[in-house]
Length: 455
Ligand code: NAP
Image 1 (cartoon, rainbow, N blue to C red):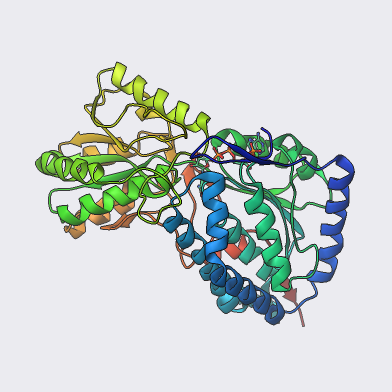
Image 2 (spheres, rainbow, N blue to C red):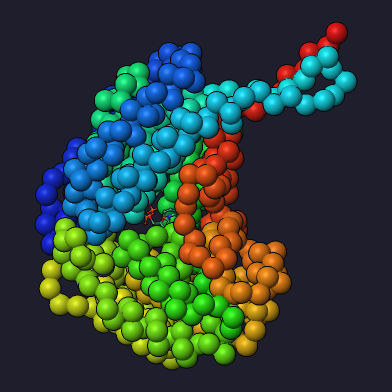
């Protein structure tokens, strides 16, 4: 895939970038290695101050960075601004809490003293996706910086200007040179980077295929990985739910980022008793969404990031319909330029369609009906993915059962699944492994060193 900025709203190629040569890549790896030697010796207070400076930069220039995001991947501008501002939160969170998370942990044993100490491991490669091109990188970088690691970013090929801007932010914030470097390379160079002795670990947020490939390479070279992969999250609505709130939240949960979110609610599993009512409220709200120019403040749905994503999504929708499903709204490609896809809801989906196994990465809601919670849980767990899950009920026993039985990395009761710097984030099954954010996120790429001191 060429490294280029292509406006998803028009299809126009605005800027192309030459990938790094092998010599340039070698010099960046060397710089990362040397930077680690310096950076690992900095104090937690210094790291926190640089993170706070980065937070100030993204906050004060959020409009500028948001425009780059919208230009490169088509996110509606108001959502792009919110994404950039959220990056400040994660920087401040680890600046404030990092020293507490990284403090020695005493453990009683037969030793005079024994404890755990968390130490940096070195340069970490981050292979990142385009869908939240700032947030995904910051949620990797903030804990990595706090623990004392240095970062190498291989960003998605369609967001090079985002990748360059992020490197500039960390440089301007005062981090020592080389602490964070953007590598403009295609995915064909990932093996070379991961296998390099100077790179100690890797994290990838993206598709199952990419995650599996990276993990195989890292496994060969015995390097730690964290994988944040796709999701086909269930959104279960039970009879006692507050239907107004559940339907309104469902629209946001499905269409945020024009539906291109790993933790978007994708499968709406509705109890028979409320299914008609929920469906009509949900579809009415989808009809009210404004699709169009993502640079306009009042746009709800922008274009999808690439023509390939739109083609893939439409093909999944058509396969469902050809097997007997019904489009309640949408499901047709609009005329005109850009990768636009309308808000779509599909019901009456028989078994044996892509809804059983595939991730619908766009504003397409899959609606199912079930007689009770047991059937809802069975249906929810049927897919190979297990990222998040949302359950709507006022009955505590139902919530408890869902929390215990859903195969997912998180369960949100009476709310939509979202990421929050304070809460660990990640999946089970084919959604990946490891956690980002929270205290767990900062320990993923640390050497958890056991110390035992005798008399
Ligand atoms: P993708 O094609 O897997 O790309 C993600 C990144 O991986 C890009 O930088 C890409 O580089 C790189 N890549 C692609 N193939 C690779 C390979 N064989 N080896 C190493 N790197 C490779 O995913 P996407 O379509 O851009 O992103 C959407 C996917 O990401 C969805 O499945 C979504 O659910 C998932 N996602 C998950 C999370 C989470 O936290 N769990 C968050 C956001 C998105 P190029 O661009 O150069 O190909």
